[in-house]
Image (cartoon, rainbow, N blue to C red; front, side, top):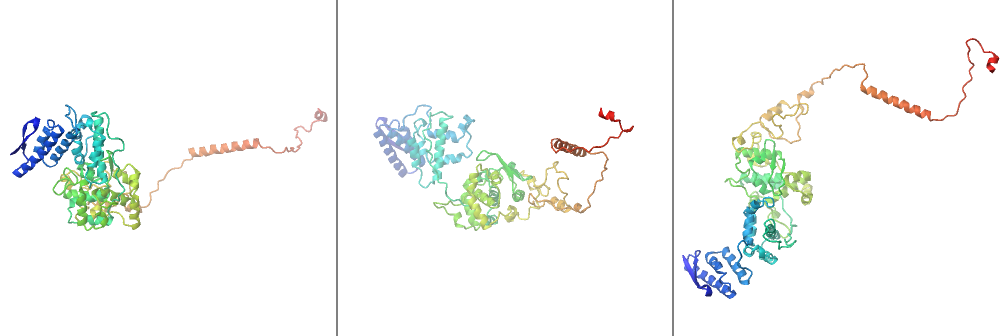
Length: 530
Protein backbone atom coordinates (compact mmCIF):
# COMPACT_ATOMS: atom_id res chain seq x y z
CA UNK A 1 0.00 0.00 0.00
CA UNK A 2 1.26 3.46 -0.89
CA UNK A 3 1.55 6.26 1.67
CA UNK A 4 2.14 10.01 1.42
CA UNK A 5 3.91 12.27 3.95
CA UNK A 6 3.32 16.01 4.21
CA UNK A 7 4.75 18.73 6.46
CA UNK A 8 1.77 20.77 7.70
CA UNK A 9 3.26 23.56 9.82
CA UNK A 10 1.59 23.53 13.22
CA UNK A 11 0.06 20.10 12.55
CA UNK A 12 3.55 18.64 12.10
CA UNK A 13 4.65 15.98 9.68
CA UNK A 14 1.72 13.67 8.88
CA UNK A 15 1.47 10.41 6.96
CA UNK A 16 -1.62 9.49 4.91
CA UNK A 17 -2.55 6.07 3.57
CA UNK A 18 -3.49 5.82 -0.12
CA UNK A 19 -5.61 2.63 -0.36
CA UNK A 20 -7.09 3.45 -3.78
CA UNK A 21 -3.69 3.90 -5.51
CA UNK A 22 -2.22 0.80 -7.15
CA UNK A 23 0.69 2.24 -9.12
CA UNK A 24 3.38 4.81 -8.44
CA UNK A 25 1.87 7.12 -11.04
CA UNK A 26 -1.50 7.10 -9.22
CA UNK A 27 0.22 7.66 -5.85
CA UNK A 28 2.15 10.70 -7.17
CA UNK A 29 -1.08 12.15 -8.64
CA UNK A 30 -2.84 11.76 -5.29
CA UNK A 31 0.11 13.34 -3.48
CA UNK A 32 -0.26 16.43 -5.67
CA UNK A 33 -3.96 16.61 -4.80
CA UNK A 34 -3.22 16.36 -1.07
CA UNK A 35 -0.55 19.03 -1.33
CA UNK A 36 -2.99 21.38 -3.09
CA UNK A 37 -5.71 20.85 -0.48
CA UNK A 38 -3.25 21.23 2.40
CA UNK A 39 -1.99 24.50 0.94
CA UNK A 40 -5.52 25.91 0.83
CA UNK A 41 -6.16 24.88 4.43
CA UNK A 42 -2.91 26.50 5.58
CA UNK A 43 -3.77 29.71 3.73
CA UNK A 44 -7.22 29.81 5.41
CA UNK A 45 -5.82 28.96 8.85
CA UNK A 46 -8.00 25.84 9.06
CA UNK A 47 -5.34 23.12 8.93
CA UNK A 48 -6.25 21.65 12.34
CA UNK A 49 -9.96 21.41 11.55
CA UNK A 50 -9.17 20.19 8.04
CA UNK A 51 -7.07 17.19 9.02
CA UNK A 52 -10.02 14.73 8.91
CA UNK A 53 -10.84 16.05 5.43
CA UNK A 54 -7.28 15.43 4.25
CA UNK A 55 -7.46 11.85 5.54
CA UNK A 56 -10.70 11.31 3.64
CA UNK A 57 -9.21 12.86 0.49
CA UNK A 58 -6.33 10.38 0.67
CA UNK A 59 -8.66 7.38 1.01
CA UNK A 60 -11.53 8.29 -1.34
CA UNK A 61 -11.94 8.40 -5.06
CA UNK A 62 -14.46 9.54 -7.68
CA UNK A 63 -17.62 11.26 -6.40
CA UNK A 64 -16.60 10.68 -2.79
CA UNK A 65 -13.42 12.71 -3.41
CA UNK A 66 -15.55 15.43 -4.98
CA UNK A 67 -17.67 15.59 -1.82
CA UNK A 68 -14.51 16.07 0.25
CA UNK A 69 -13.38 18.92 -2.01
CA UNK A 70 -16.73 20.70 -1.57
CA UNK A 71 -16.62 20.31 2.19
CA UNK A 72 -13.07 21.65 2.23
CA UNK A 73 -14.19 24.64 0.14
CA UNK A 74 -16.85 25.46 2.71
CA UNK A 75 -14.34 25.16 5.52
CA UNK A 76 -11.92 27.52 3.82
CA UNK A 77 -14.71 30.07 3.24
CA UNK A 78 -15.69 29.91 6.89
CA UNK A 79 -19.09 28.31 6.22
CA UNK A 80 -18.20 25.06 8.00
CA UNK A 81 -17.36 25.06 11.69
CA UNK A 82 -16.73 22.29 14.18
CA UNK A 83 -20.23 21.15 15.00
CA UNK A 84 -21.20 20.38 18.57
CA UNK A 85 -22.41 16.93 19.50
CA UNK A 86 -26.01 16.32 18.47
CA UNK A 87 -25.97 18.78 15.53
CA UNK A 88 -27.42 17.04 12.46
CA UNK A 89 -26.34 17.67 8.88
CA UNK A 90 -28.66 17.64 5.89
CA UNK A 91 -27.21 14.33 4.65
CA UNK A 92 -27.67 12.62 8.02
CA UNK A 93 -31.28 13.72 8.35
CA UNK A 94 -32.02 12.81 4.73
CA UNK A 95 -30.75 9.29 5.43
CA UNK A 96 -33.04 9.20 8.47
CA UNK A 97 -36.00 10.00 6.22
CA UNK A 98 -35.14 7.69 3.33
CA UNK A 99 -34.30 4.70 5.52
CA UNK A 100 -37.70 4.89 7.25
CA UNK A 101 -36.33 5.43 10.76
CA UNK A 102 -38.08 8.81 11.01
CA UNK A 103 -41.41 7.16 10.15
CA UNK A 104 -40.79 4.67 12.97
CA UNK A 105 -40.20 7.53 15.40
CA UNK A 106 -43.26 9.54 14.30
CA UNK A 107 -45.77 7.07 12.81
CA UNK A 108 -48.71 9.47 13.14
CA UNK A 109 -47.08 12.25 11.10
CA UNK A 110 -44.63 10.54 8.73
CA UNK A 111 -45.46 7.74 6.32
CA UNK A 112 -42.76 5.36 5.09
CA UNK A 113 -41.60 6.10 1.56
CA UNK A 114 -43.13 3.74 -0.98
CA UNK A 115 -40.18 4.15 -3.36
CA UNK A 116 -37.12 5.24 -1.33
CA UNK A 117 -34.79 4.53 -4.26
CA UNK A 118 -36.34 7.47 -6.15
CA UNK A 119 -35.60 9.78 -3.20
CA UNK A 120 -32.00 8.59 -3.12
CA UNK A 121 -31.61 9.17 -6.84
CA UNK A 122 -32.84 12.75 -6.53
CA UNK A 123 -30.78 13.48 -3.41
CA UNK A 124 -27.58 12.34 -5.11
CA UNK A 125 -27.77 15.48 -7.27
CA UNK A 126 -27.61 17.86 -4.27
CA UNK A 127 -25.72 16.06 -1.49
CA UNK A 128 -22.42 17.47 -2.74
CA UNK A 129 -23.64 20.96 -1.82
CA UNK A 130 -26.16 20.40 0.97
CA UNK A 131 -24.91 17.15 2.53
CA UNK A 132 -22.24 18.45 4.95
CA UNK A 133 -24.17 21.60 5.95
CA UNK A 134 -25.78 21.44 9.43
CA UNK A 135 -29.54 21.94 9.29
CA UNK A 136 -29.38 24.78 11.79
CA UNK A 137 -27.12 26.78 9.42
CA UNK A 138 -28.66 25.78 6.10
CA UNK A 139 -29.98 28.88 4.34
CA UNK A 140 -31.88 29.77 1.19
CA UNK A 141 -28.57 30.50 -0.54
CA UNK A 142 -27.44 26.91 -0.02
CA UNK A 143 -30.62 25.57 -1.60
CA UNK A 144 -30.45 27.99 -4.53
CA UNK A 145 -26.86 27.01 -5.17
CA UNK A 146 -27.76 23.30 -5.11
CA UNK A 147 -30.47 23.80 -7.74
CA UNK A 148 -28.22 26.01 -9.87
CA UNK A 149 -25.53 23.29 -9.97
CA UNK A 150 -27.89 20.58 -11.29
CA UNK A 151 -26.81 19.04 -14.63
CA UNK A 152 -28.00 20.98 -17.63
CA UNK A 153 -29.61 17.97 -19.35
CA UNK A 154 -32.28 17.59 -16.66
CA UNK A 155 -35.82 18.50 -17.68
CA UNK A 156 -37.84 21.11 -15.80
CA UNK A 157 -39.97 18.37 -14.25
CA UNK A 158 -36.84 16.62 -12.91
CA UNK A 159 -35.60 19.88 -11.36
CA UNK A 160 -38.99 20.37 -9.78
CA UNK A 161 -38.90 16.86 -8.31
CA UNK A 162 -35.47 17.42 -6.75
CA UNK A 163 -36.60 20.75 -5.27
CA UNK A 164 -39.67 19.05 -3.79
CA UNK A 165 -37.46 16.48 -2.05
CA UNK A 166 -35.28 19.24 -0.52
CA UNK A 167 -38.36 21.14 0.65
CA UNK A 168 -39.91 17.98 2.11
CA UNK A 169 -36.81 17.07 4.11
CA UNK A 170 -36.52 20.56 5.57
CA UNK A 171 -40.24 20.56 6.40
CA UNK A 172 -39.82 17.29 8.33
CA UNK A 173 -36.80 18.74 10.11
CA UNK A 174 -39.08 21.57 11.25
CA UNK A 175 -41.87 19.26 12.36
CA UNK A 176 -42.14 16.65 13.74
CA UNK A 177 -38.36 16.32 14.21
CA UNK A 178 -38.07 19.93 15.57
CA UNK A 179 -34.41 20.20 14.69
CA UNK A 180 -34.86 23.68 13.21
CA UNK A 181 -37.38 26.35 14.16
CA UNK A 182 -38.48 27.31 10.64
CA UNK A 183 -38.13 26.03 7.11
CA UNK A 184 -35.58 28.33 5.41
CA UNK A 185 -37.25 27.82 2.00
CA UNK A 186 -40.07 30.34 1.39
CA UNK A 187 -43.39 29.53 -0.16
CA UNK A 188 -43.11 29.33 -3.93
CA UNK A 189 -39.44 28.30 -3.90
CA UNK A 190 -40.12 25.02 -5.74
CA UNK A 191 -39.76 25.87 -9.45
CA UNK A 192 -42.66 25.43 -11.81
CA UNK A 193 -42.54 22.64 -14.38
CA UNK A 194 -43.79 22.97 -17.92
CA UNK A 195 -46.41 20.22 -18.21
CA UNK A 196 -47.86 21.39 -21.53
CA UNK A 197 -45.92 18.93 -23.65
CA UNK A 198 -48.06 16.62 -25.73
CA UNK A 199 -48.03 12.99 -24.60
CA UNK A 200 -48.25 10.01 -26.92
CA UNK A 201 -50.67 7.10 -26.89
CA UNK A 202 -51.22 3.98 -28.97
CA UNK A 203 -54.00 3.36 -31.48
CA UNK A 204 -56.02 0.11 -31.30
CA UNK A 205 -54.38 -1.28 -34.45
CA UNK A 206 -50.92 -0.62 -32.96
CA UNK A 207 -51.97 -2.43 -29.80
CA UNK A 208 -53.06 -5.43 -31.89
CA UNK A 209 -49.69 -5.41 -33.64
CA UNK A 210 -47.87 -5.35 -30.29
CA UNK A 211 -49.97 -8.19 -28.85
CA UNK A 212 -49.43 -10.33 -31.98
CA UNK A 213 -45.61 -9.98 -31.98
CA UNK A 214 -44.49 -13.47 -30.97
CA UNK A 215 -40.83 -12.36 -30.98
CA UNK A 216 -41.58 -10.41 -27.75
CA UNK A 217 -41.78 -12.56 -24.58
CA UNK A 218 -45.34 -13.45 -23.61
CA UNK A 219 -44.81 -12.13 -20.07
CA UNK A 220 -44.26 -8.62 -21.42
CA UNK A 221 -47.20 -8.73 -23.84
CA UNK A 222 -49.71 -9.87 -21.21
CA UNK A 223 -48.35 -7.11 -18.95
CA UNK A 224 -48.70 -4.41 -21.63
CA UNK A 225 -52.14 -5.67 -22.63
CA UNK A 226 -53.34 -5.57 -19.03
CA UNK A 227 -52.10 -1.99 -18.56
CA UNK A 228 -53.68 -0.78 -21.81
CA UNK A 229 -57.08 -2.37 -21.09
CA UNK A 230 -57.40 -1.64 -17.37
CA UNK A 231 -55.71 1.78 -17.01
CA UNK A 232 -53.60 0.98 -13.94
CA UNK A 233 -50.31 2.68 -13.22
CA UNK A 234 -47.34 0.58 -14.30
CA UNK A 235 -45.83 0.44 -10.81
CA UNK A 236 -49.22 -0.57 -9.34
CA UNK A 237 -49.53 -3.47 -11.77
CA UNK A 238 -45.91 -4.44 -11.09
CA UNK A 239 -46.71 -4.84 -7.38
CA UNK A 240 -49.91 -6.84 -7.87
CA UNK A 241 -50.04 -10.06 -5.85
CA UNK A 242 -52.20 -13.11 -6.67
CA UNK A 243 -54.47 -12.31 -3.71
CA UNK A 244 -55.38 -8.97 -5.32
CA UNK A 245 -57.19 -10.74 -8.18
CA UNK A 246 -60.45 -12.67 -8.01
CA UNK A 247 -60.69 -14.37 -11.38
CA UNK A 248 -63.63 -16.48 -10.25
CA UNK A 249 -65.77 -13.33 -10.16
CA UNK A 250 -63.63 -11.20 -12.46
CA UNK A 251 -62.71 -8.49 -9.93
CA UNK A 252 -59.59 -6.72 -8.70
CA UNK A 253 -58.90 -4.97 -5.39
CA UNK A 254 -56.15 -2.37 -5.17
CA UNK A 255 -55.63 -1.24 -1.58
CA UNK A 256 -52.12 0.24 -1.86
CA UNK A 257 -51.55 2.86 -4.54
CA UNK A 258 -50.01 6.25 -5.16
CA UNK A 259 -52.92 8.31 -3.81
CA UNK A 260 -53.65 6.03 -0.80
CA UNK A 261 -57.23 5.73 -2.08
CA UNK A 262 -58.24 2.02 -2.15
CA UNK A 263 -60.31 1.10 -5.19
CA UNK A 264 -61.84 -2.01 -6.74
CA UNK A 265 -63.57 -2.70 -10.03
CA UNK A 266 -64.72 -5.42 -12.41
CA UNK A 267 -62.10 -6.50 -14.93
CA UNK A 268 -62.95 -6.66 -18.61
CA UNK A 269 -64.22 -10.15 -19.53
CA UNK A 270 -61.54 -10.62 -22.20
CA UNK A 271 -58.82 -9.73 -19.65
CA UNK A 272 -60.26 -12.30 -17.23
CA UNK A 273 -60.24 -14.99 -19.90
CA UNK A 274 -56.68 -14.12 -20.94
CA UNK A 275 -55.38 -14.19 -17.36
CA UNK A 276 -57.03 -17.54 -16.69
CA UNK A 277 -55.32 -19.10 -19.70
CA UNK A 278 -51.99 -17.39 -18.97
CA UNK A 279 -51.96 -18.50 -15.33
CA UNK A 280 -52.81 -22.04 -16.38
CA UNK A 281 -49.66 -21.92 -18.53
CA UNK A 282 -47.47 -19.93 -16.08
CA UNK A 283 -48.80 -20.06 -12.50
CA UNK A 284 -47.97 -16.81 -10.62
CA UNK A 285 -45.69 -16.75 -7.61
CA UNK A 286 -45.06 -13.66 -5.47
CA UNK A 287 -46.12 -11.22 -8.18
CA UNK A 288 -48.83 -11.50 -10.81
CA UNK A 289 -46.58 -10.16 -13.57
CA UNK A 290 -42.90 -11.11 -13.74
CA UNK A 291 -40.15 -11.59 -16.32
CA UNK A 292 -39.41 -15.03 -17.75
CA UNK A 293 -36.47 -15.14 -15.33
CA UNK A 294 -38.83 -14.66 -12.37
CA UNK A 295 -37.79 -11.09 -11.56
CA UNK A 296 -40.56 -8.46 -11.25
CA UNK A 297 -41.37 -6.53 -14.40
CA UNK A 298 -40.25 -2.89 -14.43
CA UNK A 299 -42.69 -0.24 -13.34
CA UNK A 300 -42.17 3.35 -14.43
CA UNK A 301 -38.58 2.47 -15.39
CA UNK A 302 -39.66 0.27 -18.29
CA UNK A 303 -40.01 3.06 -20.88
CA UNK A 304 -36.98 2.05 -22.94
CA UNK A 305 -38.01 -1.62 -23.05
CA UNK A 306 -41.54 -0.58 -24.03
CA UNK A 307 -40.29 1.51 -26.97
CA UNK A 308 -37.93 -1.27 -28.05
CA UNK A 309 -40.78 -3.77 -28.03
CA UNK A 310 -42.95 -1.41 -30.06
CA UNK A 311 -40.23 -1.21 -32.70
CA UNK A 312 -39.90 -5.01 -32.69
CA UNK A 313 -43.65 -5.24 -33.32
CA UNK A 314 -43.36 -2.98 -36.37
CA UNK A 315 -44.95 0.12 -34.83
CA UNK A 316 -43.12 2.98 -36.54
CA UNK A 317 -45.26 6.10 -36.02
CA UNK A 318 -42.59 8.85 -35.60
CA UNK A 319 -44.32 10.82 -32.86
CA UNK A 320 -44.10 7.81 -30.52
CA UNK A 321 -40.29 7.86 -30.52
CA UNK A 322 -39.41 11.57 -30.78
CA UNK A 323 -38.90 14.05 -27.94
CA UNK A 324 -39.13 17.70 -28.93
CA UNK A 325 -39.82 21.00 -27.22
CA UNK A 326 -43.55 20.37 -27.55
CA UNK A 327 -43.85 16.57 -27.33
CA UNK A 328 -42.61 13.65 -25.21
CA UNK A 329 -41.81 10.23 -26.61
CA UNK A 330 -44.03 7.41 -25.43
CA UNK A 331 -43.40 5.97 -21.96
CA UNK A 332 -44.77 2.94 -20.16
CA UNK A 333 -46.85 5.33 -18.04
CA UNK A 334 -48.61 6.44 -21.24
CA UNK A 335 -50.52 3.17 -21.34
CA UNK A 336 -52.90 5.02 -18.98
CA UNK A 337 -53.27 7.80 -21.54
CA UNK A 338 -53.99 5.14 -24.18
CA UNK A 339 -56.68 3.56 -21.98
CA UNK A 340 -58.41 6.87 -21.18
CA UNK A 341 -58.30 8.15 -24.77
CA UNK A 342 -59.71 5.01 -26.39
CA UNK A 343 -62.39 4.45 -23.74
CA UNK A 344 -63.59 8.07 -23.96
CA UNK A 345 -63.73 7.72 -27.75
CA UNK A 346 -65.93 4.63 -27.35
CA UNK A 347 -68.45 6.29 -25.06
CA UNK A 348 -67.29 5.32 -21.57
CA UNK A 349 -68.15 7.82 -18.82
CA UNK A 350 -65.65 9.68 -16.67
CA UNK A 351 -66.92 7.85 -13.58
CA UNK A 352 -66.31 4.46 -15.19
CA UNK A 353 -62.79 5.52 -16.16
CA UNK A 354 -61.88 7.10 -12.79
CA UNK A 355 -62.94 3.91 -10.97
CA UNK A 356 -60.07 2.18 -12.75
CA UNK A 357 -57.44 4.92 -13.03
CA UNK A 358 -57.98 6.47 -9.59
CA UNK A 359 -58.24 10.05 -10.89
CA UNK A 360 -59.93 12.26 -8.30
CA UNK A 361 -60.59 15.24 -10.52
CA UNK A 362 -62.62 15.49 -13.70
CA UNK A 363 -60.10 18.04 -14.98
CA UNK A 364 -57.44 15.33 -15.21
CA UNK A 365 -59.61 13.21 -17.49
CA UNK A 366 -60.75 16.28 -19.44
CA UNK A 367 -57.18 16.70 -20.76
CA UNK A 368 -57.65 13.58 -22.91
CA UNK A 369 -60.97 14.53 -24.53
CA UNK A 370 -59.44 16.30 -27.52
CA UNK A 371 -57.41 13.22 -28.45
CA UNK A 372 -60.49 11.06 -27.83
CA UNK A 373 -62.56 13.12 -30.27
CA UNK A 374 -59.86 12.60 -32.90
CA UNK A 375 -59.96 8.82 -32.37
CA UNK A 376 -63.76 8.82 -32.56
CA UNK A 377 -63.82 10.85 -35.78
CA UNK A 378 -61.28 8.52 -37.37
CA UNK A 379 -63.41 5.52 -36.40
CA UNK A 380 -60.46 3.55 -35.01
CA UNK A 381 -62.65 1.42 -32.74
CA UNK A 382 -61.80 -0.27 -29.45
CA UNK A 383 -59.07 -2.67 -28.33
CA UNK A 384 -59.22 -6.23 -29.56
CA UNK A 385 -60.12 -8.84 -26.88
CA UNK A 386 -56.88 -9.69 -25.10
CA UNK A 387 -57.41 -13.44 -25.25
CA UNK A 388 -57.84 -13.19 -29.04
CA UNK A 389 -55.13 -10.59 -29.71
CA UNK A 390 -52.33 -12.76 -28.23
CA UNK A 391 -51.75 -15.78 -30.52
CA UNK A 392 -50.58 -18.08 -27.70
CA UNK A 393 -53.89 -17.59 -25.86
CA UNK A 394 -56.24 -17.60 -28.84
CA UNK A 395 -58.92 -20.30 -28.76
CA UNK A 396 -57.88 -21.67 -25.36
CA UNK A 397 -60.51 -19.87 -23.31
CA UNK A 398 -62.94 -22.80 -23.67
CA UNK A 399 -60.40 -25.25 -22.31
CA UNK A 400 -59.78 -23.30 -19.11
CA UNK A 401 -62.70 -22.57 -16.82
CA UNK A 402 -62.84 -20.12 -13.96
CA UNK A 403 -59.79 -21.50 -12.20
CA UNK A 404 -58.95 -19.94 -8.86
CA UNK A 405 -55.81 -17.82 -8.75
CA UNK A 406 -53.77 -19.56 -6.09
CA UNK A 407 -50.44 -20.15 -7.81
CA UNK A 408 -50.65 -23.92 -7.38
CA UNK A 409 -52.34 -26.78 -9.12
CA UNK A 410 -55.69 -25.02 -8.91
CA UNK A 411 -54.43 -22.30 -11.23
CA UNK A 412 -53.92 -24.88 -13.96
CA UNK A 413 -57.13 -26.84 -13.40
CA UNK A 414 -59.43 -26.89 -16.39
CA UNK A 415 -63.15 -27.29 -16.80
CA UNK A 416 -64.20 -26.46 -13.25
CA UNK A 417 -67.27 -24.63 -14.52
CA UNK A 418 -66.62 -21.31 -12.76
CA UNK A 419 -67.46 -18.30 -14.89
CA UNK A 420 -67.46 -14.58 -14.50
CA UNK A 421 -71.22 -14.27 -14.91
CA UNK A 422 -72.10 -17.20 -12.63
CA UNK A 423 -73.32 -16.66 -9.10
CA UNK A 424 -71.29 -18.19 -6.25
CA UNK A 425 -72.56 -21.45 -4.76
CA UNK A 426 -75.54 -20.95 -2.51
CA UNK A 427 -76.38 -17.57 -4.03
CA UNK A 428 -78.03 -18.57 -7.30
CA UNK A 429 -80.88 -16.28 -8.34
CA UNK A 430 -84.45 -17.45 -8.13
CA UNK A 431 -86.00 -19.06 -11.17
CA UNK A 432 -88.57 -16.27 -11.37
CA UNK A 433 -85.79 -13.67 -11.79
CA UNK A 434 -83.75 -15.39 -14.51
CA UNK A 435 -85.11 -17.08 -17.66
CA UNK A 436 -84.53 -20.77 -17.85
CA UNK A 437 -81.34 -21.71 -19.72
CA UNK A 438 -81.43 -24.08 -22.62
CA UNK A 439 -79.80 -27.46 -22.56
CA UNK A 440 -77.23 -26.26 -25.11
CA UNK A 441 -76.19 -23.44 -22.79
CA UNK A 442 -75.80 -25.81 -19.86
CA UNK A 443 -73.60 -28.00 -22.02
CA UNK A 444 -71.48 -24.98 -23.09
CA UNK A 445 -71.12 -23.88 -19.48
CA UNK A 446 -69.95 -27.32 -18.44
CA UNK A 447 -67.28 -27.19 -21.15
CA UNK A 448 -65.91 -23.83 -19.88
CA UNK A 449 -67.18 -21.74 -22.77
CA UNK A 450 -65.72 -18.30 -23.34
CA UNK A 451 -67.38 -15.49 -21.47
CA UNK A 452 -69.87 -13.30 -23.29
CA UNK A 453 -70.81 -9.69 -22.60
CA UNK A 454 -72.08 -8.93 -19.12
CA UNK A 455 -75.37 -7.66 -20.60
CA UNK A 456 -75.99 -10.79 -22.69
CA UNK A 457 -79.19 -12.74 -21.87
CA UNK A 458 -79.90 -16.42 -22.55
CA UNK A 459 -81.80 -17.34 -25.69
CA UNK A 460 -85.51 -18.14 -25.26
CA UNK A 461 -86.00 -21.69 -24.10
CA UNK A 462 -88.43 -24.27 -25.40
CA UNK A 463 -90.62 -23.60 -22.38
CA UNK A 464 -91.53 -20.23 -23.89
CA UNK A 465 -93.52 -22.02 -26.65
CA UNK A 466 -95.78 -23.88 -24.18
CA UNK A 467 -99.42 -22.67 -23.73
CA UNK A 468 -99.92 -20.24 -20.89
CA UNK A 469 -101.42 -21.69 -17.73
CA UNK A 470 -104.50 -19.72 -16.55
CA UNK A 471 -105.32 -19.80 -12.87
CA UNK A 472 -109.05 -20.18 -11.97
CA UNK A 473 -110.32 -18.14 -9.03
CA UNK A 474 -113.76 -18.04 -7.40
CA UNK A 475 -115.77 -14.81 -7.37
CA UNK A 476 -117.82 -14.08 -4.26
CA UNK A 477 -120.88 -11.86 -4.06
CA UNK A 478 -119.46 -9.81 -1.22
CA UNK A 479 -118.49 -6.37 -2.25
CA UNK A 480 -114.74 -5.82 -2.13
CA UNK A 481 -113.15 -2.92 -0.30
CA UNK A 482 -112.75 -1.08 -3.60
CA UNK A 483 -116.57 -1.07 -4.07
CA UNK A 484 -117.07 0.51 -0.67
CA UNK A 485 -114.48 3.10 -1.57
CA UNK A 486 -116.31 4.09 -4.74
CA UNK A 487 -119.68 4.16 -2.89
CA UNK A 488 -118.28 6.61 -0.34
CA UNK A 489 -117.01 8.72 -3.19
CA UNK A 490 -120.50 8.84 -4.77
CA UNK A 491 -121.98 9.97 -1.46
CA UNK A 492 -119.49 12.81 -1.14
CA UNK A 493 -120.32 13.97 -4.68
CA UNK A 494 -124.08 13.99 -3.90
CA UNK A 495 -123.43 15.96 -0.69
CA UNK A 496 -121.52 18.61 -2.63
CA UNK A 497 -124.39 18.89 -5.12
CA UNK A 498 -126.91 19.49 -2.32
CA UNK A 499 -124.74 22.23 -0.88
CA UNK A 500 -124.58 23.93 -4.26
CA UNK A 501 -128.37 23.73 -4.54
CA UNK A 502 -128.84 25.14 -1.02
CA UNK A 503 -126.90 28.29 -1.77
CA UNK A 504 -128.25 28.83 -5.30
CA UNK A 505 -131.12 31.43 -5.87
CA UNK A 506 -134.04 31.22 -8.22
CA UNK A 507 -137.18 33.46 -8.52
CA UNK A 508 -140.09 32.35 -6.30
CA UNK A 509 -142.88 30.39 -8.00
CA UNK A 510 -146.41 30.35 -6.54
CA UNK A 511 -147.60 26.84 -5.85
CA UNK A 512 -150.77 25.75 -7.66
CA UNK A 513 -154.00 26.11 -5.70
CA UNK A 514 -155.44 22.71 -4.96
CA UNK A 515 -158.82 22.33 -3.39
CA UNK A 516 -158.66 20.39 -0.18
CA UNK A 517 -160.34 17.05 0.03
CA UNK A 518 -162.34 16.58 3.17
CA UNK A 519 -163.28 13.22 4.35
CA UNK A 520 -166.74 14.23 5.64
CA UNK A 521 -167.66 16.71 3.00
CA UNK A 522 -166.97 20.42 2.70
CA UNK A 523 -166.77 22.46 5.91
CA UNK A 524 -169.34 25.13 6.64
CA UNK A 525 -168.90 28.78 5.78
CA UNK A 526 -168.74 29.92 9.33
CA UNK A 527 -166.07 27.53 10.05
CA UNK A 528 -164.08 28.72 7.07
CA UNK A 529 -164.44 32.35 8.07
CA UNK A 530 -163.23 31.61 11.52
